[in-house]
Length: 308
Length: 203
Image 1 (cartoon, helix red, strand yellow):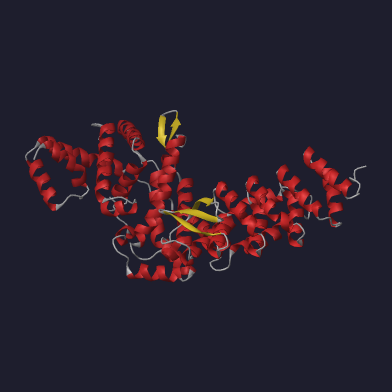
Image 2 (tube, rainbow over the protein chains, first blue to last red):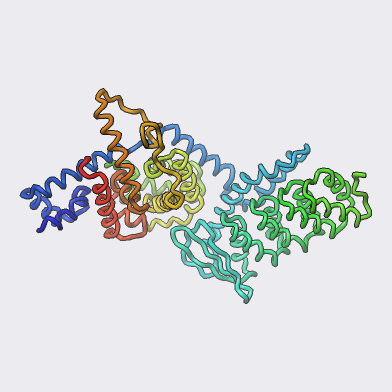
């Protein structure tokens, strides 16, 4: 055997990853070859130097990680109940607390952790669904929805990713597809959320879809996704639960376009509860187009903008 | 070459781990926690040594075990749990390493007046060297090792870490990374060659 071929085997020899035959050849050769013997010594020295670099995580860090994990699981991932409701109730409680005073920043602060809770829980819920999903799927591992693709025939293709990716195909009226879309509405990727929420709009008659749209509107960090949810809620603008959320969002959302669209939806179905709230809002609103929208809405309802 | 309990378990699923998994799959929270405790030290150590940052290691830990929690029902015992877990962990770590390669901002070394030092040195007790020359030599060696490791691709880095520090077999590593034993061998070979080239006769 030549030195060249032995040199290639030395790292693997050191790590005990050669076949017994190869191992014997290396040993035989190095016995009589100073070059390869030195090479082997160098390999050992390299390994010894690298050994010193190893660090053991501090025991405190491990304990912190463990308690973080338990908190995340106990706080956010119910194993059976669909999480949307839980997170929603949590959200309403938090809203009630944050609107007792004039502070408008409550929602922005809340959105992140609650969004994370919903994401985690829906992720878990979604993952369970895959197991029972009838539409063409063979692989049952998933963690991330990569894309949602509608086609012209009323179908939809959802691509999921973990170490493997797969596509689940089915019709919009398929219950499993709908539930996947509901889960996808909480995915990390905002493009997936926009696409899913957009597709769910056509199903806003279902109470589960309505709850998800309300959830997204209140909690999604991306205004584009919130606007899509609002469009989906348009046909439900007369629903009292929807109106309650719209009023809360109008008070708390930090995006002007969202607030303008909320006003549109609210005034489409006049109710007298709104007048007082809007009069109050006109005083505080910093954004010109939102303020003008509010003033116009109040005029249309024959109410004074309240600041004169 | 460290080989810890979880690494040894990697070759097969022990009956205890097996029953923990089944209980956790059935919703037993305590079993899940016990399962986590069986493996989490080696997971944290891997993340810490690869990323050299306690914050990043903590993120990897959290994300990995949450994914395990969410997907455990899908574990079918067709590979060892250790392999399944490490597929998740190595994926997350590789993503982090790749992001760093793109950003090039999170260097594992920090600049000081005495030159760059490993971030982790600030967390480690520096062993007291009476001999300043030896201490300088050691510091230079460390610096070269950091440079050498940064020259590796994320995949080479991962294979090296799993073989050298976690003591896993290359066949097992290939399985975790979705590749063959042969490819893992080549990766390890390239990694050692690169390091030898950077370190030269220093070692």
